[in-house]
Amino acid sequence: MKDINKEQALELLINGNKRFESGKSQYPNQDAKRRLEGLNGQHPFAVVIGCSDSRIPPEILFDQGIGDLFVIRVAGNIIDDAVIGSVEYAVKQLETSLVMVLGHNLCGAVQTAISGVEESKYIEVIAEKIQPAIDAVSVDETDYLDKVIRKNVELMVDKLTTSSQILNNSLKSGEIAFIGGYYDIATGKFEIL
Ligand SMILES: [Zn+2]
Image (cartoon, rainbow, N blue to C red):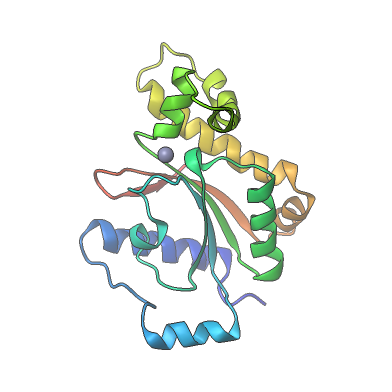
């Protein structure tokens, strides 16, 4: 039996973000007592796979503290084998019940991938992962960048559950939920895609 189920986990994130965007953050679970609780292990209620962008720190924008979120950050919130392995660990070993891929407006990684000018083979690896989202959106569309960013989140959520048998089984059993999120760096608001 999980401490916090997937519905409760989503509610915690939504409420935390409401506090943050309205300037009413409570900064929970950040004291010495919470640190000491960590000696007995960790039970994060959600996995957040977010972009490395310095403007979207998950613990801050969801108003959470130590031990609350299992955070994986990589430019463009892309999913690769190491990310999948990290999510599997959280879901199987830590019994985390909600997995979110979090994109955001004005994402530099997506912009770079669209521009097609990658300065190194390592940046190219990231751009290649974003390419399917670029291919899925017509350049003529209004809010083109934003649409690619949203599509990228959607495809990354799909990739998690189609690549990993462990995650797919957990999804089918109803144990965990996978969602896509989108964060606006100006308003501080997060929405579910
Ligand atoms: Zn970004």
